[in-house]
Image 1 (cartoon, rainbow, N blue to C red):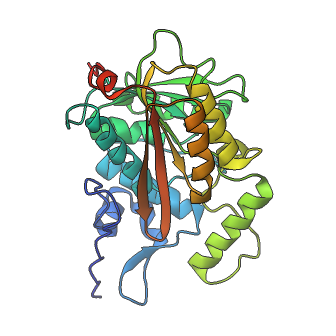
Image 2: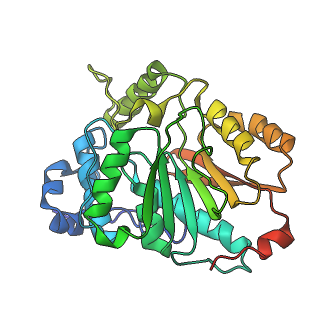
Length: 315
């Protein structure tokens, strides 16, 4: 059967290896179990049932094996299963941001250390950042089960053992307290914050997403990409979470070159800009990203002047 070539995903970062779409034949060779989830649609294009969490997990496993030298990756049932093209976009835009503070050169290697706030059970940002640029990471989370699963992923991929360290945040109301120590120097923070106000709101969005994917309303609502409480919702949603992050970051102005986070709701930006102004940051950048119909953006801020940024030691 003839299969139509997939159009290039031009909204993804130019360095994103997934701009050409998913090469399912190759991915199925690497992970045969993926084949049971792949079908030919009416346009003669191979496609996946993205409303099926098992299908998304199998796709992730195969992509990590094919593109990122990961031999083992898994997550417990119910935890967030991240779309890899969008996650690696964040990594590449972050690399561009760091290059802007480093005479246009992307800093690489394990001496470039990032702090992943809310690493989840999937460990995805440290995996991708280490594979793409050799960066090292500290990953934090308030969920012990998530930390333990990341530990398992790291132990089963020996190349990650020296690259990723984990820390449980024992006081959930804080973000950087207990985590950033006096001697720490992070090139960046990275975060995919909980963006809903409640479980009800998260479920409503999931139902809408599955309805759009399947053209029918699910009879039993599920969060098709998974997600625990701390991953998907918190009181006040992403606005409250990022506002707290900004205020806390002001207590560690010289210990991180660029603080960054995803912001899914554009309407939250004005309030966040006002908060950043209150804590007297030196510079703010908003980096737009898009994956298919989904648009998002990275909010980045630094307390370092341009001169201090140039003096930052990546090695």
